[in-house]
Image 1 (cartoon, rainbow, N blue to C red):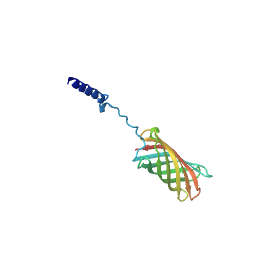
Image 2: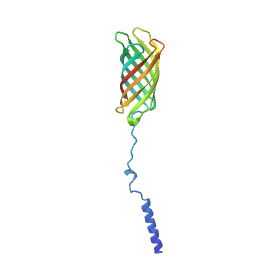
Image 3: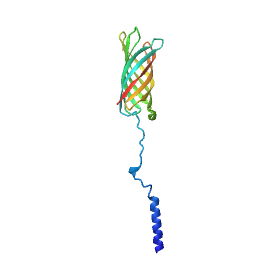
Image 4: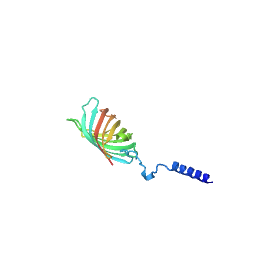
Length: 176
């Protein structure tokens, strides 16, 4: 009987040591959180940009613009902007534009390439307004959670002269 009790005791001690683990509790374990993405859903953005407009066969026009964008998800957003450009010795032209944005954030690089499609109206001091459409793409780099740099280009098409051109923007974006 002593042999049986001794054998049972040895088996229980061996089993207890085998199932005991490393002696750490859950509080001792290190949990690594995944890196946060600087591009968020529900994000409101304010843009300030330098603008260049290049029409086929015409001199370039230079100016600036302001914009407001809202991203419903991390990938889909809408925006509205107001751009003002002028050529030396010619009229100043304003453009009010609405856009749909599709972006693909690369969170580990703080980078988001995006595509856009939209349209609006352009008007100036010496001519009537006219509508236009545009399609383009760009790239945004986030310096911090709230501050980013962006650059984009759009192909503009219109039924009015000049019928097509390229508009480029580069600027600063504040997101909150």
